[in-house]
Length: 504
Image (tube, rainbow, N blue to C red; front, side, top):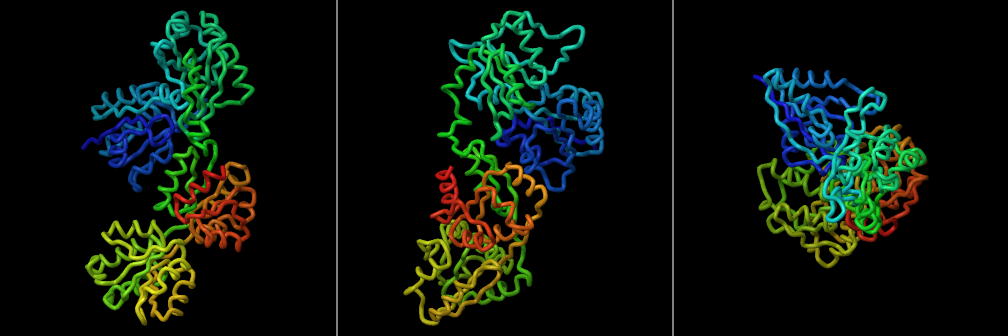
């Protein structure tokens, strides 16, 4: 059977500016053929076992010729594959999607077009520049900036284009800017017309250069602005002064900052989302990965088999809650097996995870660490209380030790272990040494220890700011040669983000 090809617009750069239908297509993909301008995080929606083929194009540097890309889509579809051709922006706005579709049609292969948000309107919008505005601009044109200025005859109708449209948006035009501005002026566009060059629009790396038609080429050369960038011309550019929002410090105080998130990939999304909402560029580098305990789940399964013996269950992380209930369900039991046992959660995030299983924590300490739990449980434990503590294999011993001092019998059952994530240590050292990263976040002691192991030493962290989720993590950092610049007073993701925001 013939396959199916989806020609999908990935949007202008911000991976969140992708359509629901595009995500649905990616989820079905057997093959993903993607280009340079599609943010790699968009690929997270495609299956892990899909075939990924990079065909990105930079100026004068094409990984694969367009004709070969067209044929690749035909070949993969002829194999019966579901193919997603992922293109930056929109497939039909200088995206050559038409050429790809025509060859598929000639070969009798089905395809669909999934429009994307074009950079022609979205990039100016992120710069606070509307392409149309009442009483300022009632028309706009999207123009390729790639036309070869040395060819004998131009397809561009400069005599009409220069003054016939209020707003002009040139895509991929930085390299040809001297030619473009020369033609505009020769054909009647005043040299003092406001203009802007916007590089990496909609992304945290966005850079906006305000200029004029007459000085644009010189200003870009001085600023050393490189592709990808758009060139926008017209009176609407003046509106940026009042409509600037994306790169505005009050709105996005972390704009221009790059933050390294070291949490396990499965847990990083909340921290990443909160930092991105504040304008930061986030690099997810999972220093830890969660695995089954080294000796398996024997101790936890045995404890679950005798749940009725325990008066208290104490959870010290959301991971512990999740792994405990995974094993409980694997044993063919559910929350009813807890009977009359009371529950303690080390903090609000752990308590929220319990709520997902229909359970309310009886105790949440004011201080979200082991010492806080001990203080909160004083006077609440029955004589000779039996306590189950499902937790990380490598956790501190202070909690079971102090509980035993209070007369309790404590069973520690490893629910998971944290191991080093699969991270390219050399590449990360280069980023730190090159000043690419402004801040490294640590959300647990294991993220500290494992990142230092990945880097080979604590030395690469000496030149970058570090933020810790609480005092225990901060103490681990100090013990390993890293003095934290920020330590959250509230030991949660929200508390950590607020601390970072206040510091910057």
